Length: 278
Image 1 (cartoon, rainbow, N blue to C red):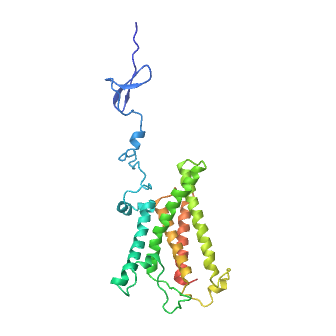
Image 2: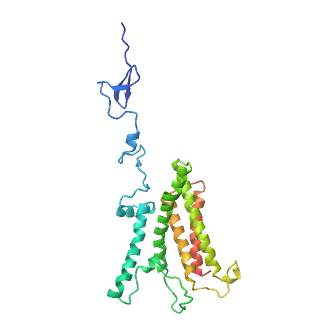
């Protein structure tokens, strides 16, 4: 009676027997704990690196690694819990100062107010019609609201638009991300457009009366809502530029045009504020 010899093959230097029923095993008859052709368990390991040396875990995952770690790695931009903690710190400090200052520091202005509210009020303006001018503390305001817009972007994307997309049958990760990005943009422009119309309606330039750009030019003082609107716009586009530079969104065909658009938008906002075309 003839015996059928099992063929052998080598897998990464290990001699393996191919049995009649198609199963593989080591020469000594012991099967490996992890299948030789199974890469899923390796790719999910925290320390696993792909052949090109890049880490398998996403650097910009939305899972927090701790507030301080997220701050150092800039991951607070994509982790809504961390950006929320960051934006709450000035609010808590401002509130504590408002509560305690009357007892321990009378007459001293709240040092945390420039983060939350616009600064540089014109002293000679009337309380009924206050006016504001430009100043260095505007940069503090913009920096704080970059954090606010980061929280808004991630919170509304992850906790509203992506669940909404899943509800209506969108399952692919790429399409979920794209749906969230477009939903966030739609929400932002809807809110800011309505606010912009409100601000514009309070100005002599309403409705597109452009001659008022030059009457009594330069306009060094601004209505408070107008200044807040411009600074909030500046903060938003700075945040969007961070998104592009850090590569948080998948690059599109018009990536370089989009980068140029963000730079031009920021230049326009800064130019209008600097030269008082308000």
